[in-house]
Length: 195
Image (cartoon, rainbow, N blue to C red; front, top):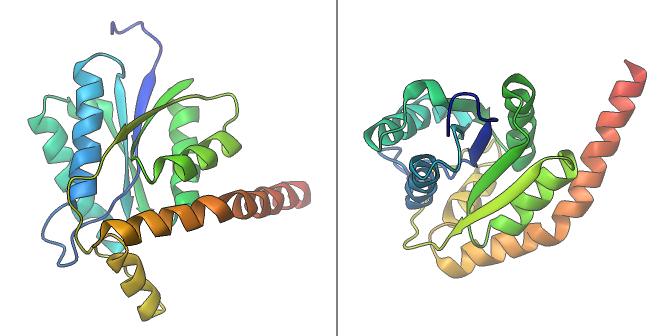
């Protein structure tokens, strides 16, 4: 892509750190590497990384270093900070859609996660051209997922430890995502109307 080409972004959701916070989860590494392949293939010219929870700075630094080692210049990498849900990620992406003005986005997600991530983006940005760049999981491990209700954090961290639990988590949320999105969109419209 040349500098005058339109902005096309790769969006990489947060797949968190491993449980002991010592490194990126396999899902995180594979999604970041996928975005770098898109960049090197000149299909995208910006990469937007989502980072989660109170360890977002650590996750950001690890992802940034990985992308730099794969040949992506720092000025083409952007960060959505401290997300706690898929909805936070979508709202964080809004900032970059407006700031950078891109109209096409490659969604870099693991195959089980793709349908609900796509639904969330499509519901919030119907005019955005979304291309799904999926990858198959090679291994899973427990991830760091803090939650004020400790057992929920444990369940969220455990969901990525086994393929069947990862699949079940995503299929369950794929079914309820449309309901959650309608509720969130309605809340946003009410908040905008009262402002």
